[in-house]
Length: 117
Image 1 (spheres, rainbow, N blue to C red):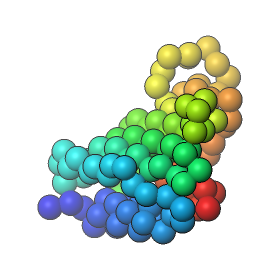
Image 2: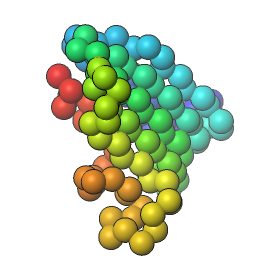
Image 3: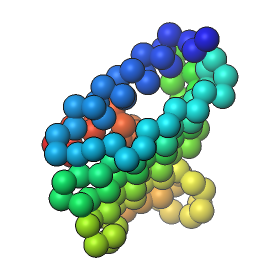
């Protein structure tokens, strides 16, 4: 059984994805690894042809959701990269490490899917 906090997080995320306008979900996968751990893989296609892929590994620790790993990839209809955020440690010398992106973010993008509306 999932912890209430993780269950609530997944419900909010699913609701945010469902509310996206002019888009459809190509895939939505929640992989429950333990009562306090989940992996998410979501692929959303917009009517404009743009694609958003979200991958996240989350765990509940000390009453909070901790994101172990994430990747947010957004591309245009010609498959050109618009942005990509991840915390994969492939450039440890970057000032923004472990966030390896042109953009710095303070929290995972999943909580703000409304930016795509």
